[in-house]
Amino acid sequence: MTTTANPALSLGPVYFLWDGPKWRDFYFRIADEAPVEHVTLGETVCSKRQHFSEPHVAEVIERLEAAGKRVTLSTLAMVTLERESRHVRDLIRDSVHPVEANDLSALGLLKGRPHSIGPLVNVYNAATARMLAARGAQNICLPPELPAASIREMLAAMPGFSFELFAFGRMPLAISARCAHARSKGLTKDNCQFICGEEPDGLPLRTLDRQSFLVLNGVQTMSSSCAVLVDDLAPLAEAGLSRVRLSPQDCDMVAVANLYRAVLDGRMDGAEAIAELASVYPGVPFSNGFLHQQEGAAWVSRGRNAAMGHA
Amino acid sequence: MELICPAGTPAAFREAVEAGADAVYCGFRDETNARNFPGLNFSREELRQSIALAHSKRVLTFVALNTFMRAGDEALWYRAADDAVALGADALILADFGLMAYVAEKYPEQRLHVSVQASASNADAIRFLIEAFGAKRVVLPRVLTVQDIARLTRQIDCEVEVFAFGGLCVMAEGRCSLSSYATGKSPNMNGVCSPASHVRYRQDGPDLVSELGAYTINRFAPGEASGYPTLCKGRFEIGDVEGYAFEDPVSLDVIDEIDALRAAGVSALKIEGRQRGKAYVAEVVSSLKKALDAAPAERAALVARLRAMSEGQRTTTGAYDKRWR
Image (tube, rainbow over all chains, first blue to last red; front, side):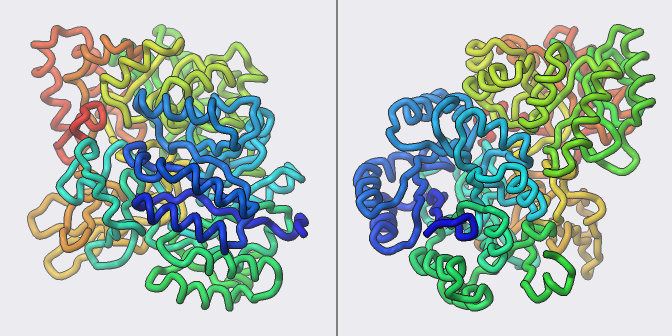
């Protein structure tokens, strides 16, 4: 039973370059085993990678839909080339599935059609959300940078509208015309040899004092820490949050989905889920600072949170 | 091509007007603009006087309200837009769709420019901004080559403004949360990047270490020129290799591309630097004004001095050149 107090789980697009079979097998297993209701898929970060997953898209969608998942197709986060514009136009024109807009070109082309807004579009307030909803947006996944106070404002301002929260995964923090990933290996974006495929979970970038900080994922820069909001969801679910997004990492995402589902269903305590997640996705620090209006890399545990007087 | 010049203070505004700016852009003294630094920006009265001065010299004033409205506090941004319109701003530079919708509906006659922070990087994106908000001009993100820009201007019925000189964002503008990931303060929400409030320098043996929040951004050996720890221009470690992972501490300079940009259909060149002093603004504006009017061969001498004023004394053409990618 889905009520406003029990959000649906949603799986975001794989942001990393995984080879075709790995990508296909990942979604097959999601279809067969993961308790997610919504799956958004398709290359989002770099148009040069599209041919890796493309041969498998049809069979993946078929398998997901046969399992009862609702499929949405993601558009590119940054569109600068004619080829990329054409790809977005063709996708929107031909798709029988809802599309998730991740840049302004898709926003324009999707007007009047039911669609979703991805976390890479800047939706910081209800005025923007209303404007997008009036054009046909039916679900908005909010940017990871948003604090809980802003999310609550928007939930209160638009009761019944479907808002989604980025609640697990390395956070997309920036995108550039330059490929730092290729550059770190002596290559350039135009001659990259798909070198980002060597790091299916991102290439770690540390400070000169050997502190983990960021990871490179092609032209995208992500947090080294993994957003884990599993213990922060209850009050937002109470306030009307509709969907909880899990962003694929190179770990057991079925286990991740099971843990989030268990917490949302009240079958497991948040702290226990966090302890479990640490073994499902080992060696990666967790963060939830953005939600608590601190630096994004910060980790605020519920005990400390309560002691500091936050909701 | 118009020359669009920065002003962080009324004094810099005056210098820009005197030095030959076609338009000056500035913001209010709060988080409604993306240069929300201590000691900068304009009160309502200062803006009124500055606009009067500009209009007397037939110079335009653009008011930047180019952060994203904080949910629940939208009134701060709406009031800023109301006041900028009432004070006679020639254009508002906006990034937030909600604020664009407000201005487009309430002030349909007001010229609406789309901030670089909105990240409109292609023809369909710009068509969306024209259709939804009646945008008259778009400031392009620094992700396009000169060739990309030429192709773009042919496809759209909208003026295009590009950054020509000053600070360089390595990341697509308005789509970067690196600063808030390290400090809790971001360009989009707070109008700051790598804020001074979170910067610390510490001596570590012979080295000078610069930190932003809890992170080391750079380490300088004795005698090495040190710089401000802007996150995307820091030195990091990838694998076993230390280096500038995103970009060296350089600034943008595309003066050599002026003719190509003009041929590409660019309407206006923008100078970054509202945080800069009035002497810098005066020097940069007057040199660039002369360079715009000069024959290509005379340009090099005119801008030689400018280059010495650039951050770290080194410059790049950034994404305007395909090889930068």
